[in-house]
Length: 165
Image (tube, rainbow, N blue to C red; front, side, top):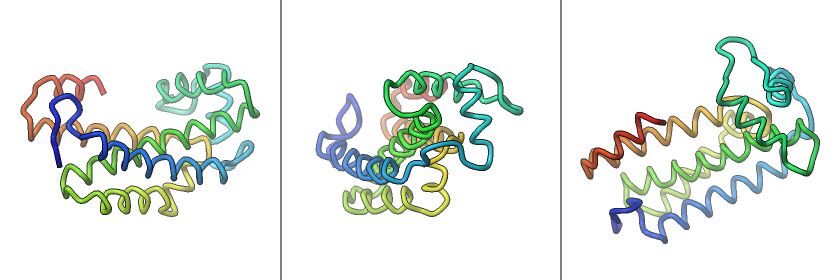
């Protein structure tokens, strides 16, 4: 693995992670819930549309980002908010594949780990409906990646980014 100063990963490694993420996103889009589903889906979609507050803790960041997805010029509003979960699910797969590359230096293992996670029963179920779990998973894996990259590089800018995340 060639650890570059700017991103920590070379272009080929980022491309491999992106391929896993795009595969997950494609499947998520094909299986995306077309409308409101069970759990808290209706509450999250409504709060996203009107910039409201959901049940505690309110999920303000989720509502703000989901509100931006309601501006998309295609699909029903519920579908657009469900799409946000799919996008953050795929972004989580991308970061997870990079994390596996960082630890194992094994690109096929990174793709396998990313796709196994993407299509695990629970994560896939949450990635196709309006829920907060894929956004939370994205930030969790991003924090892990930043901390482990900092451990290897001791670049304090990574700690500042981690603190912001």
